[in-house]
Length: 281
Image 1 (cartoon, rainbow, N blue to C red):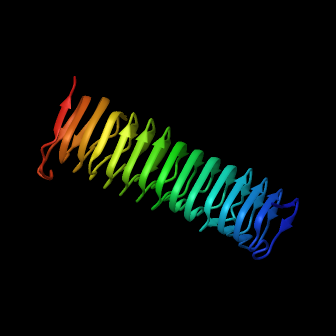
Image 2: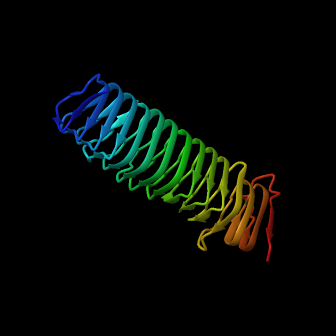
Image 3: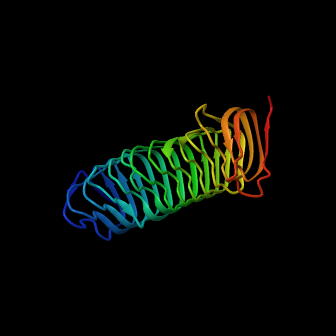
């Protein structure tokens, strides 16, 4: 593998069509498309300041690198990439990719990040700010994610999440085949219009969660005291530990909780309107 180190590059496409290249302590300054149409690339302890630094790059490893705010839309159309111990301050990262792995990565501007990724593994990742991360992605595995971004995980398929802390709004809309374990999910309108969403030992907060859901499953979950009007028009099998403030117009299934503040069944309920609702106490 060829090595370049302790250098600075600027302008347009300075490392265009590089292959079998290891970069150490490199700075990509102004300009754009610093590493484009490349393969078998390693970047260690590097700094990326210009736009679009990694486009159409196959088989890459990026460690201990920094992506400045100007490095917007930095990594698109690149397959088989692993990133470790990096900090990202630019928006709109990671789009139209296959087989992407992130470990110990801090993303301070998660706006429109992780769009249309097929095969995403993230571990010990933190997302701040921005909207719609993970839009349209599939085959995702997550362990220890922290996120305060809005509208996370919309239109995703085949997702498994463990040990996450997600504080958001309108999360997990229009998802399919998603299972979440041992996580905090706090945000308005969680999981609307989902299909095959399963929550196991999760704590749920926010207004009107889990409505319009199809084949929804909750196992040993808890609800925040202010979380209300859950399950409207949903088909659901729910085992809830502790108190839930209110349940409204579930379509079918079974809901069991230790205690239920109120059950709202009004003229707007949708058929078959035969959900069994039980308070254990």
